[in-house]
Amino acid sequence: MTDTDRIALAFSGGLDTTVCVPMLEEEYGYDEVVGVTVDVGQPAAEFAEAEATAAALDLQHHVVDGKAEFAELCFDAVRANAAYQGYPLGTALARPVIASAILEVAQREDCAGLAHGCTGKGNDQLRFEAVWRDADMAVVAPIRELGLTRTYEQEYAAERDLPVSGGKEGTYSIDTNLWSRSIEGSELEDPSHVPGEDIYEWTTAPGEATRELAVGFENGYPVSLDGQEMEPVAFVEELNDVAGGYGVGRSDIMEDRMLGLKVRENYEHPAATVLLSAHRALEDLVLTREERAFKRRVDHEWAEKGYQGLVDAPLVRALEAFVETTQTRVTGTVTVRLEGGQARPVGRDSPYAVYEAEASSFDTEAVTGDVEQADATGVAKYHGFQERLANSIIDGQE
Ligand code: ARG
Image (tube, rainbow, N blue to C red):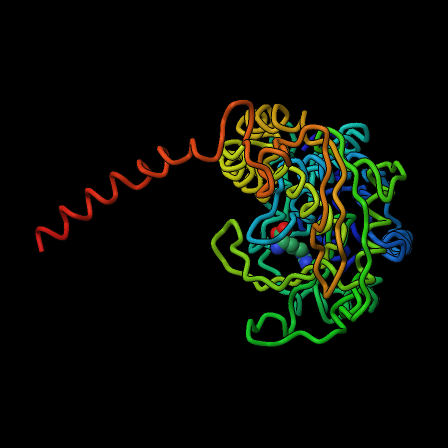
């Protein structure tokens, strides 16, 4: 510990991080806790709760705006079609942004340590510490290190009259940011339990209504909605609102966490669903078959590192170089139909389409240049030659 004896805490005002404040002072001997809340698009009520709790705890409290940086990272993820087991990585991508912002405050405020309220079972402890352990500071995780349970924390908070209210600490454990809303815990921990409508806040149950949207891309980045240019943060907020109204972007998955424990996760991510499906549809038009196939592998690796909170890994930089090369042609517009809770691409247009209607058409004789349909006859004769030969050998052995 340095002479300042101060520690920066990732602070949300929820039960875990509120309990961490007295713990850091009493169990770990820090003189002062500096609470840091990073805005990655949580609802306003969460900031109000964090502010109120910080005031009641007499905590020095910083709020840092990380929305623009986070939205940029989400759009990088769109270029890499990033999803882990069906989850578009909202929480995962937000963590490195939050961790770096907290580290900056800690350095500025001359803190000797960094703390988070994550448990020892989830992914977030790993994502935070991947960023923090690069700095020359102590890293403290009271909930994990002291082996605390939620029930113990509630009793501890009640005994000390800590300001933990209902609000966010309702039935479920919820994590919300621009890119996704995750709902876990309570009866959802039973994978056979069918969740009720009450778990959803961003999406309404899909009905009969439909709507078409035009999503514009430039170099793989989403840039416009129905012809109107938009900045990333506003774009995502607007699209969450619009597509959420059609029940788009719900997922209910069994997710394999980094430590190996499975977790049943429910998510809402309307904007991510629309942008990811539109982006992929545009790639299908402008990339060659081999590029498409190889990019699936690159995308998969990108999403794995994204899930791990390691978007700065050398591997990701290398993958990004490939992504960048392919995305120079991912410019154009995709029409997406919101229908029955789905976002289905129903039209695509790009100046870089690897497509000639004239060549592919069933109504024209010529293919291209002096190539004609009949030229495929030789290819058709060869096709499957090796398979036919191998099968005749296998059949002869039987
Ligand atoms: N399982 C997801 C992840 O690790 C989301 C976790 C969100 N946390 C929560 N308390 N709902 O990225």
